[in-house]
Image 1 (spheres, rainbow, N blue to C red):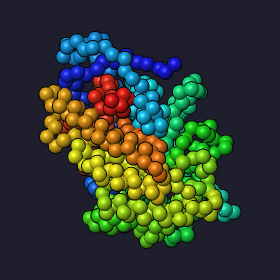
Image 2 (cartoon, helix red, strand yellow):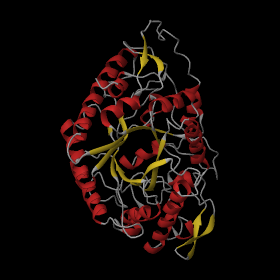
Image 3 (cartoon, rainbow, N blue to C red):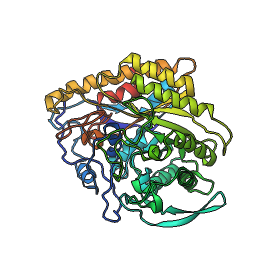
Image 4 (tube, rainbow, N blue to C red):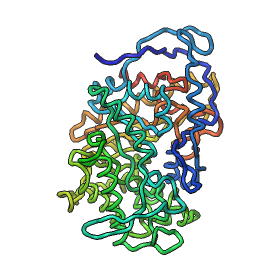
Length: 484
């Protein structure tokens, strides 16, 4: 019997609490004086705009402290609302699309029990939003290597940085315990991400892991790349791992195609950004060393070598409906497919990850349809991996504006979902997953960013997700849960 919950249908605008400082933060201890970085950092690579580091869990705790304000049978404005059984989101998507439906969450969000209730009720997949990225794996010690040790690789002893699995494992342990207790209602995990120009400490590319020394050569970088991918996949998906079987897939490479040129992202993507920055927003030190796409090809070769055969492997990117960039992505996917082969020698790619950071006007139906079709022609499987919607520029977050924005947002999601449903019925196209980039509006990265996909300059002036700050489903939720 499927699990059901009781909620309230929002018929008219509710007076929603204004929550200040609700950006997601890292909840682990900080090393070497480094500030932790939430997953809003991912947007840096899209514009080159530097985002301030966000440390601690103050925002998450403040938001969690606002729970329980919705009274049974009435909204905050005192208006009585119809009590209604809320449908289960994952059941609706499965019935319509036949694919998994996921959300993203950081460690701080999983500490919010109302978010956890939403996840375990409505989703069957979860993307670790920040804690499996390279900077998190070195304890956010991005200015200085946290220490080194020796490792064996292909019969050779190499020196490697010490990794810190604690942040990711804290999240995975919570999911593991849930899965053990609920074998018929398990949550599978998406790993994000192995290779990315951003949130990879600059010292990782230098001699002795010291960014003040020279860059290493290609051969040395290949060894570091293989070691890192082997270590991550073995630790989290290997035969002896506690988490074996929990991961359904992993983003191998993220955002390697340029917005400006439609070709590969280079070390001069944003000339005013110094290549010596601890974390890059736009420029790629991977490209600086390789001067080619060799690191991308090798990343998929190494992932194929060390990943279990049933672990899905992805390329993931944003602005994926832009014609010029789309053509560049297609060329990369073609090369990855052409080089597919046995583990140890060939690549393997399971699907194209279309991030889906869209707004109320773009992309239009035709561009989305064409993008899905173009990627499917090469790799067959397509996924929406970071779905959310920027509000209209006219939206000011006021009470009177919310009902109208929620209504238009639902209509916009309905149009996009219609394209996905229709494409999924097309021969040769297989949409195998839809993941929303968060659960409740006040934790969204868009609340603290003002670049691609949107962002606000005040408090809660974005409403990109399916649940509001009262943890209640919005009209957009029913687009997917009921499919009417």
